[in-house]
Length: 270
Image (tube, rainbow, N blue to C red):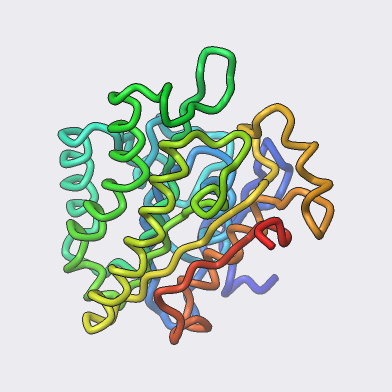
């Protein structure tokens, strides 16, 4: 590993992986990512991957910054924000703009999402989902992505940015664990992705979505392993596999891709 590419490393105490703390950009300009839902699973893997490739990563999460896997800027580039609270969301957006300091934003990844369950841990259907839960799910899963995209429009235009919305296989089929509010919010987010792509294209902004299926994360629902038999690739996906697809959609190799929803589910949607 050349010293010009990597000036400092640190070992992640969770995975034991060597993480770069300062990597030079080939173009001389460091790109910036704003990532929601960064504290675990897909978000955690995405933050690590972008950091390893020299990006500045500004993370947003309901949780405070964890020192288990430090990024280059650590807590200085983490914003603790409740995306389900419109007032707190506005405060978080203002803080994001302050940290970007009139600079360019090259990628916005809307990964945060919630899927409430009933007291027994089972999915909530159309008849037993209380209206406050409907509203909360849509605030986080649907409204937050468009509020952030609109609020960071100037920065995205300056960076000719890429927006990636994280939808779900549940947005296109009834899922045994995902509740009705979650599923419909993800279906709406897929439609929003197309609308955003059509409207933002002339601003130089690309908008795509990824739709993960059964991904091996700490928040898997009990019984998920039984679904593996229905997946053509006969296994769960990994957060790293999802993160690499997100990275592809934010880099120049996908410069003519917009308005797409990529299924990452091992063929489960077939």
